[in-house]
Each structure stands twice: as C-alpha cells, then as structure tokens.
Image (cartoon, rainbow, N blue to C red; front, side):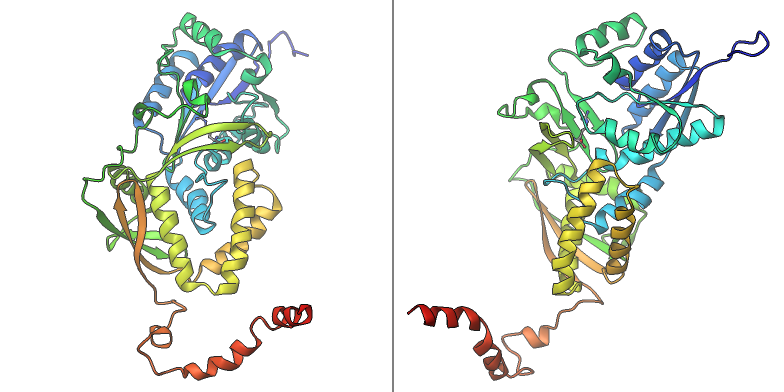
Length: 399
Ligand code: ARG
C-alpha cells in the first residue's frame, strides 16, 4: 500500500547488453510490467568498444539510470584464469558465453542491493542456457526475477517492429540475422540460416578470424605460464587482458580457433553453434601441453575428470555450487607446478605445440634417451614378465 498520498516508485535493474533483446526489454518493462524506473547495467567483459558505445547511447535514450562497469580485469582473473587451469571445454566448445554470465549477473545484483531495488530482469529467451545462468545468481537474492523475453514469448519480427516504434534503430536484417554474443574469450554466432545444421557457415559470420590460408607463413609464439596461468608472450611479461587480446589478433590472422558444432544445451535441446576463439585455442592447447610435462601420470588421469566436472558446472552457470569450490581447490593445488613455457606454431587454422620447457618438468632426458647408459635396460625384464600376467594365465587355461 502506498503511504501518505505519495506514490511509491517501482524500480527494476536490467542486465543490459545494448543489443536488440535487452533494448526492447526497457519499454516492455514499463508498458507491460508497469515499472516506473528502469536501471540498466552494462558490463564490459571485452565485447567490442562499438557494442559498449551503442549500449550507452541506447540506454541514455531509453533507461532512467544507467551504469557501465568495466569488468575485464576481473573477468580474466576470476573466470578465465580458473577456466585455463581446468582446460575448460564443454563438448569441445571453449566456454565463452557461459563463463561471463555469472559475473554480469552479479554486477546487476550488486547495483540492485546498493540501491535497495527489489526487482531484477534479464533479456534471455526461454530456449537457451543464459536464462538459467542469470537466474542461478539472481535467485540467490530475495528479489523478484523478470524475464520479459521468456514470459511474453515474443517473436523476432514482432520485436523488430516494436523496437522501431520506440526509436531503437535495428541493425539485424533478414539476410544478416545473426545473434552474436561476444566477450574477450570468445565470439558466438547463432541464428538465421545457421539454424540448419547442414548449412555451411558463410565467411561473413566471422569477425575475429581470417579464412585459413595455406600460403600464409607460419608464425611461432611463446607463451610463458606461472601457476597454471599465462603470464608472458614471446618473453615479455603481460597482464591477462592484453595477452588475450594480442593472441586473438595474432591467432585470428592465421584463422586459428573456429568451431562449428551441434551442442547439447542444459534444457536438452540440441543447437547448432558457431564460435571464434583464437586466444582460447592457443592458450588451452599450450596449457594442456605443459601439464603433460609437469604433472604426474596419476594427476593427469584424475585431472581429466576434474576438468570435465568443472566444465559442466561452468556451462550450466553453477559456479555457486559447493562442488565448484571443491574442484577449484584441487585445480589451484595441482597448478602450482604448472610453470614454464610452450612454443606454439600458428598455421592455416591450426595452433600446434612445437616445444615446451619447465623448471618443474617430471622429465629426464638422460633416463629416456636412446643414447643413455644411466638405466640398465635389463632391469625392465622383471617388470615385463609380470606385465599382462593375468591375461596370459586365462589364455593358457582356455587352450
Ligand atoms: N550456446 C552458447 C552457450 O550457451 C552460446 C550462446 C550465445 N548466444 C548468442 N546469442 N550467440 O553458452
């Protein structure tokens, strides 16, 4: 009930990207939901500058209050670096969108808490994973959660008309209907004709990678790691954001890091997805390679399971699950020895490790070498006698 004649203003915080869906949400939250004030929160996780600028401009036009938060450093340190430690990958996809959502959602929650606003909205549809990722964070508060896209079940065509009526200039057209989600780690392209899994992606969908070209000279880059995370490029110490941006650029020139796949969403729907992620491909390939030099065989076997479980949680946006913290404890401990550097050759869409070294290597050139006398080969004979002993016993019985 309103007190002493003064009408209570109803406010909502909207996680805002500046794209079509979230822009349309602003007038919808007023017209269909009756909110008086819309507070938009745009989180910069390394999407193109032009997207951030467009979002700020549209927010100025449509929203009542707007926040832009540069979260790039935090995104890399608290989300991408753990992902590298876990060799994060879901069904072969390097996890770009998934890993950014909890941070974006949390920033919206922080603003709502600071301003005492009890309503949180996002612009995700009811078909994808992102609604689940946002709400896993939103619902940890006692705020009301509003998902206009899902609740009003709007068609794209309707949205485009509605946007135009509200002065939102629309860049998606019938022939370029791509829905693009971008952050510093990956660029994802969906929609339009790509929804036919048999349709070959046209070159124009790619924004970060050139078409792989066999005539282009190969290039070798050296990645330095400390504690399981990348710290230098070609011997020059570098912060995470800059290093990833540089590798996206260099790798993109060689067409490294394109993925075209059919992916199983959390809801169970299969979806055709296209991704670009040059830095992710280079860094994950190098990291895994270095792990093989420094971790024990037992650690490597076990870590495959940890990596898989971590990736599943990250994909679902369940970074708040206690298992996530449990897995991180194992990852942080095991990564202490993942120090050293890896040479990566970039050529015609490929990123291949061609050399690795580490002060923590569990590798003895002296013992393994064909030319060495350190170990007596005869010592292995006893081992060989027992190896496969049970299988031989059974074979003999069958005869
Ligand atoms: N399928 C991916 C995921 O669920 C990416 C979705 C990105 N969205 C987009 N509009 N392209 O993580």
